[in-house]
Amino acid sequence: MASSTQDEEEVHHRKEEDALAKEPDLDLNKEAKHEDDDKIVASESETREAKKQKVEQEVKDADQEDESRGATTMVPSTTTPRSLTQEEAKAKEDEDDSEQTLRFLRRWKAPETPPEKIIHPSLVEQCSRPIQKQLTTSDVKQNKLSHSGLSLSNSQVRKKFQQLLEDSGENERRFSVYGPDGKVHEIWLGKEKSSFGLTIGWWRFVVEYWLKEWCNFVTVWMFRHRVTQRICLAIDVTMFAFWKQVSKRISQAAFEDSD
Image 1 (spheres, rainbow, N blue to C red):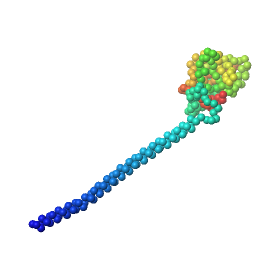
Image 2 (image 1 turned 90 degrees about the horizontal axis):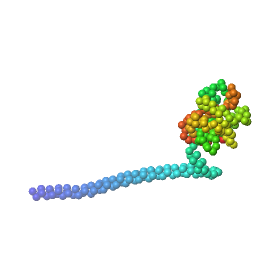
Image 3 (image 1 turned 90 degrees about the vertical axis):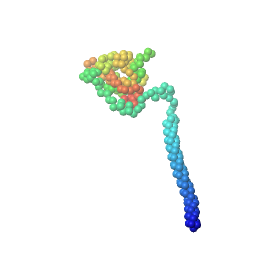
Image 4 (image 1 turned 180 degrees about the vertical axis):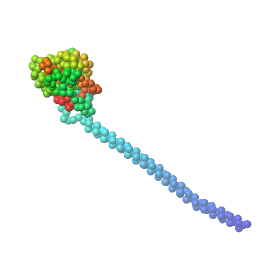
C-alpha cells in the first residue's frame, strides 16, 4: 500500500510540474496576441490618419487652385485706360452678353422687303436692306425735355438708307410710316450727330402698339411707294423673351451695327 501511495504522489508531482511548465507558454502566447492586436489597431489608426491627411491636402490644393484662378480673373488689366463709372459698371452688369443670345439673334433673319401684312409687295418699287434693333428704354420712354424717338445708328442708316434718303430731297423730313398692321402714321425723321431718329409722332406709335424695351425688336425698311413715288418707312415688331439689353458686342455681330 505504501508503494502505491508513493506512486500516486509521484504522478501528482509530475502533473503539477507539467502544468507549471506550460503556464509560461500560455502567458507568452497571450502577450504575443496582445502585441499583434496592438499592431493591428496602430496600423489601422495610421491608415485612417494618412487618409485624413491626404483628403485635407487635396482640399487645400483645390482651394489654392480656386484662389489662384480667382486672383487671375479679378486682377484688373494694366492696359485699361480708366475705371468704369458706377453707371457704366451697372449697365455692363445688367446687359446680356451670352453666346446663346448671340447665336439666337444671328439666326433671326428679317425678310428683304416688308411682309404683306404691312404693305402689298406690288406697292414696293425700291426697297432698302432692313435695319434691326432691340428697343431700349430711351426708345420707348417719353422725355418731357425733348422729343422721344426711335434711335437708328448712323452707320446703319448711311449703309442702308442713304441712297433713298438722297432721293427724298433735303426738305423731306416727314415720312409715311407703315406700322405692323399696315396702318399709316406720319413721323418725322431727325438727324443727330451720331444717329438718326424717328421723333415727332413716334410716341403715339409706341403707345398704339404697346412697345416695350428689351423684349421688343423692330425691323425698319425704307422704300419707294410705287403709286405715290414717295419715300416711306415700314416697321415690323417682333417680341422675344429678353429681359435685359443685349451688349454692344452682340448688337454689332447680329445686326451689323458698327456705331
